[in-house]
Image 1 (cartoon, helix red, strand yellow):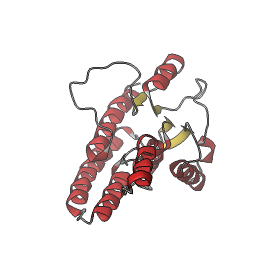
Image 2 (cartoon, one colour):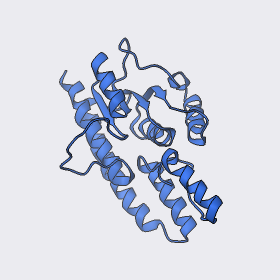
Image 3 (cartoon, helix red, strand yellow):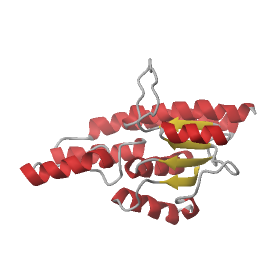
Image 4 (spheres, one colour):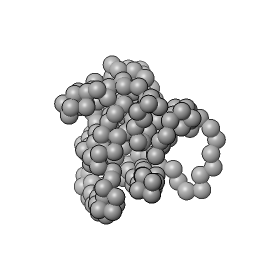
Length: 210
């Protein structure tokens, strides 16, 4: 199961009806390098195969990304300390928030979930409390004090951009309007992590130019 909200009901039904096993990662969907490594290791453990080739490739991608982020930080002081908001399903919001906070040093300002009782939601709430970011839980996205970056679906981003100034906004869910992508739009795995970083850093450059 990659996305618990979409796949877990089906996986559970298949298990109950035909006794088919399934795997779901406690780290949430493979968003960011850390959650991807956990997802890959867990799946390979269930299948009885060696995860090391995939983990080694993922580590190389993370090392290259860290070098580029360091260079960007040297020039701009960013993204460390940048505030962000998340309005996504828990299985996406949990790994994304942890990754942005721990890997990039960004600060969660508003974390909104459609439901709050899933294991991913509970883990995310606990993480925020343990890292002195508990005030972000269900905090509103307001034009009076908007975060610098917002990660949500296209409909929420359209409303945010209509009422507040965001330096960065990224659709990480199913888009609400049609778009034509000439380059692959990837959110999950190592490639997805680099795609997210590319979009984020490109938009944060606008803060440097202000």
